Length: 157
Image (cartoon, rainbow, N blue to C red; front, side, top):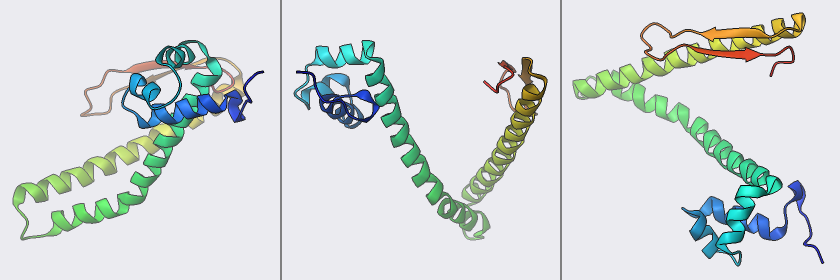
């Protein structure tokens, strides 16, 4: 008798294992928290593509939820930074640090928007000409990272 498959093609035991993997600090402890042997859990992680995909999806959902919580707290964090930066009674290093943080994140946000717009325009161009396009991203003034080169095929991949 085969085990009943759940959405994503994993069994109830595999779903249980995924929950344990998400809540335990190691694979060994995840196995100990379930009736699934360590060897079976390692085998699923190494060789069962449906299990690995379901585990990746579950991890992505956890990160997306955490990101949403961080984003919802961002306005409060900015308020705290502004309060410190504008407080004449705050220690000077705290005021400067808060102001620097505000400026750095404002700059990063603008840079991310600019890059997203450039990528969107290049993807449209690549789709229009249906030929591969090479994209070179050069470091922004003050950013010490090395240039990166990537390719986009005619379908935006």
